[in-house]
Image 1 (cartoon, rainbow, N blue to C red):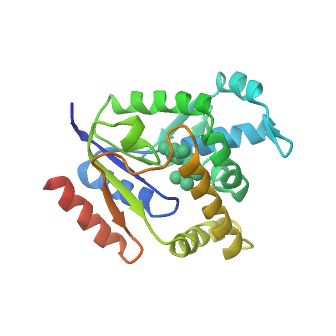
Image 2: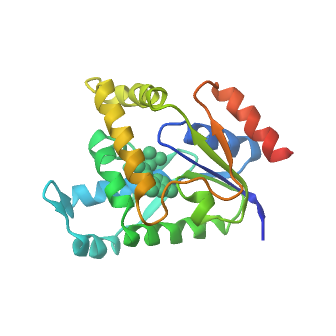
Length: 222
Ligand code: DC
């Protein structure tokens, strides 16, 4: 059954999904959930606990480790709590960004997170952004959007965000990371990044935030 109380925003990295999702959540008094932060939280835990090192990933350790992981996304403060500890800053480093797509290819991780995301959806009135929200997590959502933009526009946006935490990051490494993630996210076997059935595709390259917001609210209310 079509669920009109769920808004799903998917699309490529750094297209402004979370900015718009937060604005919609505020406007409609819905709860906002950043599903990418959840994948980043697992990646941070895997690096921190050495389930994943430069040598590779130990799936058995990760599987065991997931049992002791409790993730909580606090919409109001926009923070991710990992076993009660705020790791919002730690999950945005280039190290986590460089490893998250690998973690996101693993069915055991996806199953673990999709279950939690659907649980959150049961309370209704939710705006969730990610890569597979309209296609896998909430295929019955009434409002599904898919954001695209030119890679250079996205890299510029991401660079501005990252510079706040680390002034030494450069444009080329950010662009390279984005393109690598696009490739891995689109080509993975489980829940690849693709436009969901009935989703509305929006190229945000030449649109301002308020133009995208107007477009989304018009579609939602039409
Ligand atoms: O939105 P983001 O860039 O913070 O997401 C981080 C990574 O997590 C991204 O490279 C792909 C993955 N991801 C995913 O596979 N499925 C989601 N629903 C959300 C994110």
